Image (cartoon, rainbow over all chains, first blue to last red; front, side, top):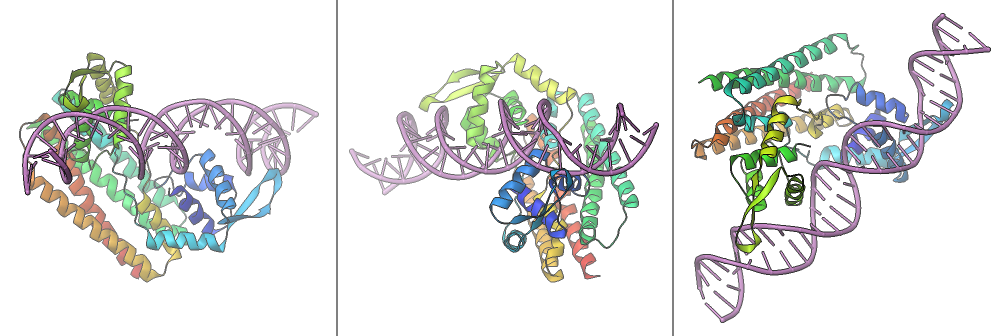
Length: 171
Length: 171
DNA sequence: CATTGACGTGTCAAGAGTGGAATGTAAAGT
DNA sequence: ACTTTACATTCCACTCTTGACACGTCAATG
């Protein structure tokens, strides 16, 4: 359950409201972790009950600005240093590859080439994002850059693989 | 909810019991889709209710061998050709990268190098698996080979990226 | 013949995640 | 003054997933 740690991590940079966090999930974390608004608000409530965050200020429109507490920072650090990342081996698009035998060779190749196209577009999107982001010295963006590079390499690899796989099916 | 399609896909190759399916999930599909036994048996029940699979034979120890039906095959085909793969942008290990700023540079580099090691081991594991699998002309294994190649490329890329990222943090 | 291990099915509780709806306030543009 | 847009929270109903538990059978081994 890393949603909890995603929220704590974002709050470790600066205090934020649920609404602010949603925007961060949609922008900086969009390729890394997704969350719905129900989840974010729910998690903030649980986190507050557990004393890992607290309401630091209240603003207009019922805005509640949450800040991470010391126990929260400790939990975050513990997660980073003491726990193993859980790898969820689950990929819809790769699962389909297993069952491509049910299609005609032409259909299967089409599927793979569509995947390649998609990966290519994604790569272009990331490169565009990289160029347009203001890389200030926000500590989050330093490491965000590393994550973005990962995304670029991943989509490049995906595209190459899909083209290779389509080629394999010809033979 | 692709668990349903994973089960249908496996049954499209040949009839199987819940127990058989579990083994297939743990072996051939292990790097692509995971499922627990509760899920498999539960899904088989739902699939049978929906008429997408049927009990083709009963064996010793209460064994029920399920077979895919024509509506099931249609559903599988529909999934493969008409629906978009859902991309779950969620990666625990990448999420951590975002928050590496909370650690000392040394700790952060350690994290990345550990990731590199892990990816390297995974790659070795896949290569070992590739060598030891009997590549008969099972239609599943033809495409399984493509998926395996994807895994190899992914882990290679992951390792390279992690080493590169660790290097970046030195500067 | 007794035990062990592989085979085999099933249920339950709790938590995680999805998607949508309801409700309202503040600020900014026309 | 009016309307739109952005801000902001909360609740609900549902499905998916996990992990553990409970139950029972067949085959081989010593």
